[in-house]
Length: 337
Image 1 (cartoon, rainbow, N blue to C red):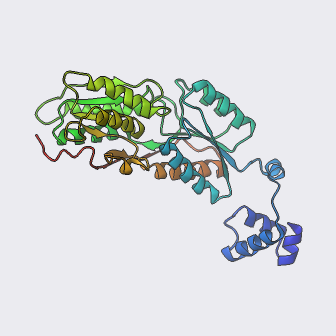
Image 2 (image 1 turned 90 degrees about the horizontal axis):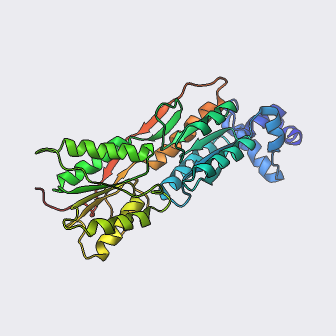
């Protein structure tokens, strides 16, 4: 840094600020410094910097499933948001296993990451108490815990469940099954929204019909959906509408329905949740609830940066995105009853 500062007629402090994308220097100066750094191949010693600043300029992200497109989109947006301040992201998966998640948390704490972001598979708040004991900022993503005062970024799951179910009702569906998710805030919220929509249906409440798919709705959602649909189709009176916990579950349901010779949506209308990238490109394009995963990732990154760069602890904050119904062919019956 001394050599670069001397060559450019700047102070070492200015070069250091350019490396950290500090707001005290002009964009022109920052570009001069970065251009020279590229020319000489200089790379800062992050370990040495951490000893001085107390920061590693890394954040940890734990998701339930690295293959789930919803969490992949969150990770991409989060990485883009923090990269602007020269932070990197260590990404790992809990595979919906609470014990594995606890191990990953311990690993991230040992690496002294500046913040941890978690879409948690836990059933209790014990792991988060341990993070708090280490004075490491953390943010819950997508899933939250009742009674835990923590930072949270996610979508309104109750609204998502109600919106999906009301849409099926509007299409004339009267035997609506909800293939529900695990006993986490996402599954519980969407279930509550489903129930609210049925109870307030025009013409009187509709019967509730809920089918669980186990504890691994994210990890093996397509297989879970396929198995659940086989059971539903064996009924004497199969459902005429199905609201699925997420899009992978809906994909499995659609496969089973079509294999059994039923038509989508004429016989059975299907709605998912998540609006993952492939949802509009299926054999029958899937109606779904868009939770704006990119916005969740960007908001989580923004909140993490504000926490890490604050000189004092900040009160817990919740940032909730509004879900949006994306109507496609899988639910449009064309007639209303």
